[in-house]
Image 1 (cartoon, rainbow, N blue to C red):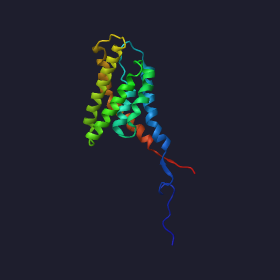
Image 2: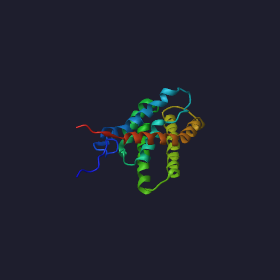
Image 3: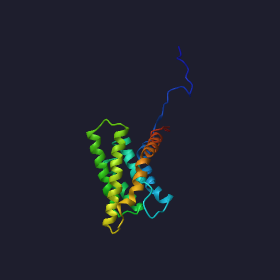
Image 4: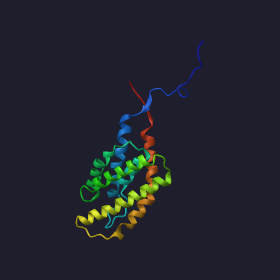
Length: 181
């Protein structure tokens, strides 16, 4: 006796799995592309655009803890330093410290909600932008603190949108593909 006949559309999805290459590289590529975007959009005398690479980095760390290793702040910060105009090594230091802070928060508060994630992100974003200004001033600039207020406000308000974009990229990252043998 033969069992029920299954069509290709309703049958089980055999030979489908997320691509390991895409799953591992897409977070890194999206963060690096986000680091490049502020330089493409506008050149201004004062910082206005949010540090998108850093926002993507925080979003990936909060959305998928453990996906990026704790040392990911070093190479990603190094890439951001090449294109941001900050003193070389500032993003390496600040991204690495942020990764450590996010790791500590992950171990202390394993259950979080949107408000907690956003408050942590706000703290990291404000600290990143203020410390970046401090490092620029140490390197020889003389920028006052009020210059970065618009960048802080835009960064904090755009973080939920960045989180949504990262979630969409994560869905693409985990889309099953046909495995050819």
